[in-house]
Length: 633
Image (cartoon, rainbow, N blue to C red; front, side, top):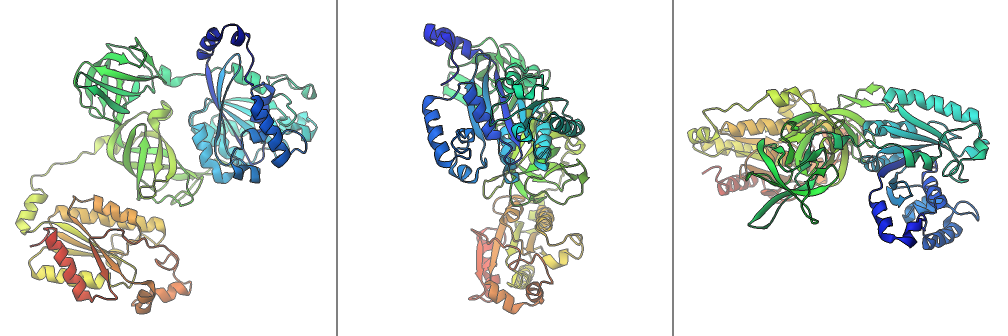
């Protein structure tokens, strides 16, 4: 059952009132595999009398069935709820538990220790006030301990408890505890963790979890529960300037228009001047509306609806800020990036970035460096793999309001989503806007694309030929250009091999290089369209994401994708350059179709089956589609 209180029986209203105004502490448990995180939280709940009777009965039954402690209770089963977790004896997902004591309310996130699930640990840490990092007394400070500690520091958690667990297996040795403390303090100092408390515990036996243990007579600090109940929680967001990302525009009737969202920084009162970003429109707060009536003040953490004195244009993703201390607005940043997916980060690939209530397009530059969590060295890197951390530049497709993560987690923290699969692939923390984000502006020109198109007497566009090596892309593209040239159309053909002799000669054939290869060509083709030309692009371009990037670079109706569809065995039989033979012999790595994937177009404007259609017929079909799109007459 939950913690006992005489008020529950004597005055339930008084109890609920006192419970409502208790402070809330969010904390995480993290560490390496089998350090005892789930057991510790289970023991913490059990000894604090915070386990309901039916849960206790289920725990007894589960302990007998799948437990690891013989006939004793296996407290880890209170949190390891997934069947896969119980079968393997590890935590996979983040397990959240809410509980309370007489002094405080708690939300604890039991995060995975296995390296494969470090990404879930980042999720649990993103909202925590305190981190409890477990260290197995038998193993000492491990790589995963350092990784989690670095992430804790990176994510802005300033107060850390190092719980040296399984002291019972080391006969409660003071010397072992001191050695672990000395090693960890040295590492903590290097990553900027200064508020660290060390507690020797046995999660299995209960030593120093809730009550002091006589078996650690040499230790005179707090128990874990004692620390958690008394540690001060500084709400830095509440002391900062006012920030409220707009979640939705609330218009229940024509007489009311308000902006709803959660206050993520500072406080606001009716009459306060505000600025709506990124537009920069100014107004004053008229009312603070809630379901329970209007408020005199709204603080960080509260969800409210603001009405403004003026009719301002604002929508989801905009941020209402303090008028005298607005957030910055920029579209290029330096940031820490934590990669969270098995597929490596591909610099230059378009991803989706979600920050606050806003969703924008983002491309990530090559890492400036990758961080070795063991020794904190900065290592050269071309990309980031699963669980790796690096510093990168970000380019967004539009300007956003932001604060550096160190100033406001909600305004500076973001996640990265794959545009095709919609999988979350990364997370990050904004450092600052790059100078060029403020200093580079678009220069208006007098002769624009429409004027150039009128001079050329046809519309501009991109004809993008994609297919396997040997499919016949270049052959068809050459015939199309010849026919268009004969008809007086201003054209230019960008061929994959030709471009690699000059513009892209520095690129190889890794996935990351292929992405950059197509990114550059998409930009060049976009410039040629702006020049009023019909540009023909013949590249394998194996990834859908980059072909979509090229399509998005020009206006609707200006992009025609031609899928030159040739079966692999046919392309390999033709093998005009001898490349397939080299790839099969292991002399050519990362060759599309052999040891590098090709993602066929899902809805191309032209689908050419080269097993049933000649190159001449394919070229005529392409030109017919260009006429249908109004690009040529």
